[in-house]
Length: 198
Image (cartoon, rainbow, N blue to C red):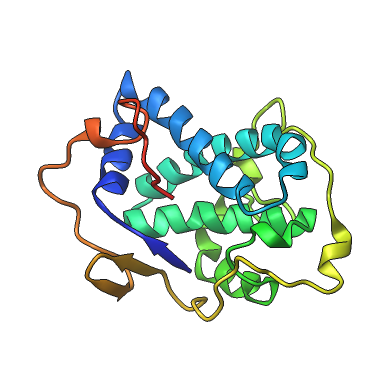
């Protein structure tokens, strides 16, 4: 999958594992990701999908931290959560929100199969053991879109590895090295700005 990585991603990583500011950053990242993906679909779908996306992305923050704790580099830990989201979008037929086409889902799953299996994550059960005790809010599916999918926001051809887009170009593999002087106050949610960190 093709993702970005900059100082705000590193700041978010540090902040999510820091007491006091961690929950604030978590909430901001959830809000940001909900808005980013709602922006890929018709406005008529926004309110009916919002609570589902909020619940889902909140759960993937726990996945992200667990992947970091398991030794995955930041880019791969974040990619894991994006793959979970694409599983969920596929299951709902929300093809316009998918970042990868459906025929690449299996390849992405296989790359992280050890982690996914350990936590009960499958394409059919994208959150596995990270599913909240109260569940995830329901949202209407559009299965008819799977019959002749267009995947208008999906980028194909990046299923074999994580591809990190930096200001200097495209890196294949683990991504950039973590800066030594990461300031968690630069993470979204610590202040009121919250620029995109998807």
